[in-house]
Image 1 (cartoon, helix red, strand yellow):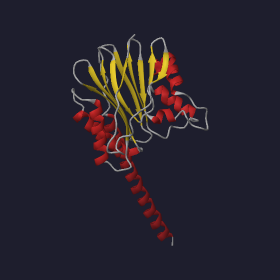
Image 2: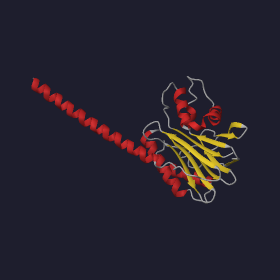
Image 3: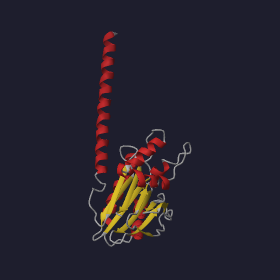
Image 4: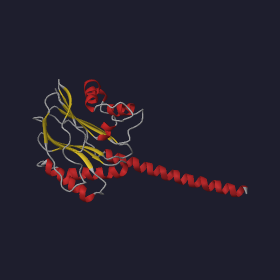
Length: 265
């Protein structure tokens, strides 16, 4: 009996070791997938004309569906892009990679952003599962003039910080999420960033982190004003730290992303 018990114990130990090895291998593969997804984000660069682009992307799992991109369009023009794929984890990360590839293949110097967003919608509608959709901010910034034209599709209202005047919300989205409907409208909005101004664009994972009904809600307008005036040296991860503290030291359950476009005073 002791011999049989020993054999069973050894068999269980062997099975446990094999399971642990498989878990370690899966964890290593997920870490590599996260590294590859991070490599798709923009690289630090001097963009000139007094403009600075800062961003934070924090998935709720190893991979996530939020993505930010800055594309050189020649001359003083930059394409700016923030997207939020529905869902979390590896499936959302895979779709996010598809969107990144499509963006770099089709967002050319002569692009009309309304036509481009409609093409992204068609791409999502035909080539992704029906339950998958995409919220986006797509814009083109002329860094010489500060003029920015953009389309906001189902993301929260961006916040503009005007130098000497404070923070205010920009108009809410007039475009639906991409991928659910075959024909959509894509109205273009236009603003100008003057010296000392800053534009904050973010996913709903960030704003929802401060709207928990069990806690005191915090306006993104007020939060961004606090950051801009008092905490910019801490970097954009300050928002993640605030979200964790606001939610009882728990990490947010959704992917978070924020893009800051600022112009020197």
